[in-house]
Length: 180
Figure 1 (cartoon, one colour):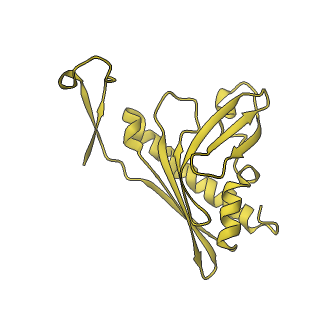
Figure 2: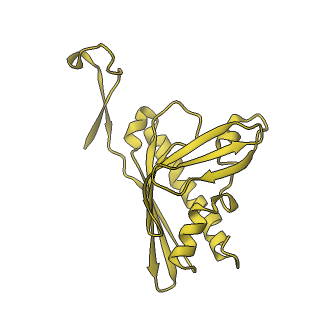
């Protein structure tokens, strides 16, 4: 399957004259982890307590600036249409995403762009399901085609990135006595 992206914004250029670039569909990045906590606790940790386990020092807009700026606060507005954003120690805000679907404690979907690049958002869906040993957290990151020529590189980076985020950061935080 091929995804067609207009190379030129609509403006006043007739549709039939717009250049089209074709980018192949890229398989979504899928990662999952099972944690020994209830669905409700797991969802709360993932959303309300994200700053407790997310590696802000390396995975943030402030870190992308490479000027010594650090994240002072991470805010997850827990509602449909809410934002996920950072507030840097210099007071600047950087929006990582917007809540497209909010179904606590089982599912959320985010329009996702936690970086300073001039590119469109992708989409991250996270589901939380009860299993015998606790909660299975399944993440799907999709929409890579929107990134054009950078799509394959971005998807490859997130394949390892989400494995680190869920496996090395989130799962240990969920296993902590306080659940974060």
